[in-house]
Picture (cartoon, rainbow, N blue to C red):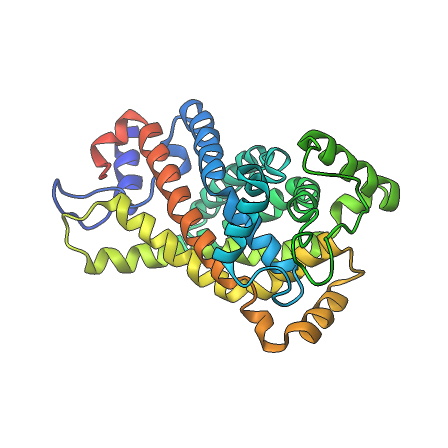
Length: 334
């Protein structure tokens, strides 16, 4: 009876075939060994963050600058940051930001758990992904926003000191120089936020973060499954399923980034420039940029999103394949 049930569940999630016959398009939560999945997932997340964090620093600095006061674009920003500060400048706020690895465990557990529950009520793949992605982001952002606020202050601290028309960015008035340790800067930022705003200061921009990232996450997972299904219809059967998933993730990243870019800029400015509300941030951004606000920092975000999406899906889907229970291994296609 159990074997019949397993076969029925597996068949409902399988692709149409190809070399080796039917295969699992989606490895579900109840098909994996969690003892393998969680540690491998954290290791993968940390590796991706190490490799791609400089893109986050560049994107954030581009978003908070006044017009093109400091940098002309993504490449110019990367060159200037490296020239002035070396590699450490591209990893400002990295260690405090790396706490996101812990929030990532809660994120993916929520995502897979909600998908599993919705699947029991007969929801299709895209609805499950949309709802679960939104719920996962809500949980993840609640955990990570305080660390995000601190890390973004560290990312932009002193930005513009080397040629910016409006001087160095330092909204908290932190005393620092090139010789300052990252730990001391992080501690000083946290202490100053607490002194000025109390504990609520660590959740500055929380609403904007939810408005930017909850729909972003929901749409990204929905688009990921949509693009995956459409790509599987047109690619030859010999093409790697894992490669198709990685490309689908990148396409999903491109799509959601274009849609949510203005909200992400507002979130960054609320957290770094200490503006009073989202409406104030929108008005200032519109006054500075007009329609350019929709494209500000977009190139850096698109590159970051595509790289993150490809890398995350590569790690995530590989780990799911490694962690799958023995009874499903014959249905796995790489």
